[in-house]
Image (tube, rainbow, N blue to C red; front, side, top):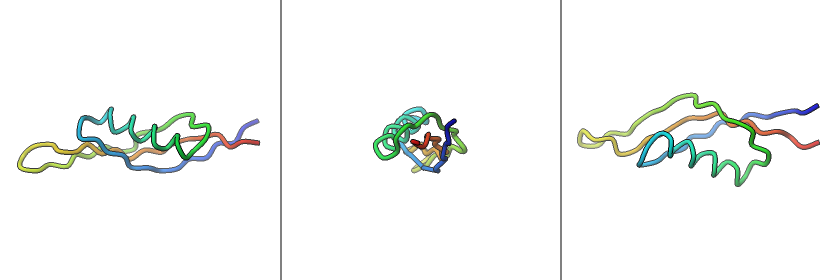
Length: 67
């Protein structure tokens, strides 16, 4: 039997949404052990002078609690 916990994070990138997701998972994995998945809850862009300058994602990261 296993028990999982979910935590919410926001990650960003100046390249793409995919890069923001990877940045978020990589950083979360430095603090959280046994990360098993994530759900991208929302996506947002920051626009300056008519151009996208930042991609942001809000994610729910799932990790398994140790016995």
